[in-house]
Length: 306
Image (cartoon, rainbow, N blue to C red):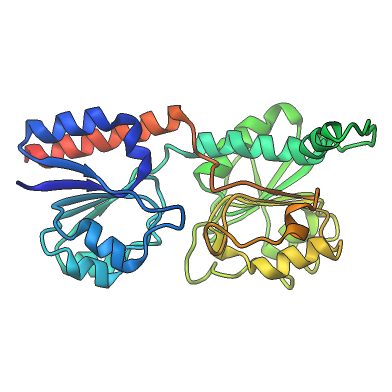
């Protein structure tokens, strides 16, 4: 029996629907999920080697994995980013790679609003002090009229710009392409860095953007109060950015993605109230899961019905 294998845990919320559709077309649906550390290459090879169709999350699908999956015809990426899939290797084997773009942006944008307000108003740190019976009345900062900069102006940034409208913020951006938008002002990189009070890293991971956000990148960030990365961890030289916060060269930092996941963080960093760490969780809602899974089910229905 042909197999549809999911290595992405987020399909599990709609497992019955995936099983029912697979059975309808004579396929077996199997979920094989990684440990907390994610799949290693050898484990991924084993997981998908017998699949005709594979639904994948953020684990690496390199040429070795693709070459080992001799029955594979389709890779469906849960979410938009396909940087961890060797597209060229898949194409050479006649494997179609598709994704689910322009869905998660609104959910990530909602999360980023939470990160911004949490950081500026010191909500988490105040909560921790309350648990220690410390009555802290120190001042936070307001989001109103802040200059918000985006490095990368894609679906997340556009959705976030809409959510920021009531706060009367000035939106500036720099993108990999010189595109113009009515509700945001284009800046060159140098101006983006020097003018932003809050800088959001939302560019895709490419060879051009890998490691681009480092101490040198931020050397002219004299107005920057808060840096947020919700793109890919590899855009940052993480050690340099964390050192900037530790040395008080950067006031506040929010990280939802990391160079290595899960990250290895020492207690000094974890206890730094000016850093907010979350576990690559920006799009994790039941609503987002249901919406993406519905799109994938429609893709499968079309593929299986051909």
